Image (cartoon, rainbow, N blue to C red; front, side, top):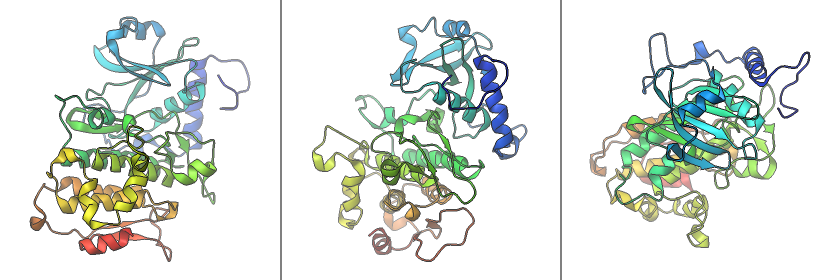
Length: 395
């Protein structure tokens, strides 16, 4: 176990005992009451039929058997952290996803511990469920619920000709669900949890394209008291990191809001956050989109050509307004995730009607930096009205 993560005194304990001690300590020091904060009440289940459960400790032998000794045809994907396999647990015949961490990879002991801690204590329909983990010797494995539709990235980029393209309504529902997951982390946990690694590949899709946030190894506890930010080493993925965090290492919940804005732009445009195959002017999605957000005549050029015009024009303008607010360079100008949820829940519930059949809505998207706080002078707000009003607010 790497030093500097948790203080340890007294007799030497093995890794499984150390993880349990850390979970118990965090329960005492952070006011995360899973029973009270969880959106599941007694007798309720998530949309996938699962309930939040305590993380189970697996042996390496059990997980090797579940994957037929990590056979290549069980491999779901791999990255800098290691490999993810599909597995079948012998106890209960449950299909799971098993992440086997590479000892020399990007996710080390600290990130492994953080992920076990976070997902053992935080439960929400839009967060992936951690079923258990293995810490035998040098082996580090995480066992999650299996998400049959893979990641959002699998459905947006480099699609095979026979793969279904996501329509407008499905994309807005995915955006709304991911926003709800972030809202839960920011507003229900105390101190708040800053996800720090929101991107399309970390949004997994259950049946019915129900989104869940995954990979919490980089998550951090947010500032408390009079502190405005936490200072930390810059981590995350290029193209998704908020500019102030990338430059200074100062992290706030508004850093996550920026990353969400990038994901929302990906959903609207079908483009990658960073695309090296495009020319220099189109390499960075935010830099490419930002000038067009000020030009009404170019709004439809931003929309994914895959839509072939099958989207509500007013809904496109409103979704672009939300994305533009989220990727503001000044953190204080970005909205709260609670307000983003309100906006996207509305958009995802609207039928795909021609513009002349739509009514403007009346809710407001604000950029307040603290929930339930009166707006300070000069803080930006976004209220749906006429298209010309929306354009003026985006400038």
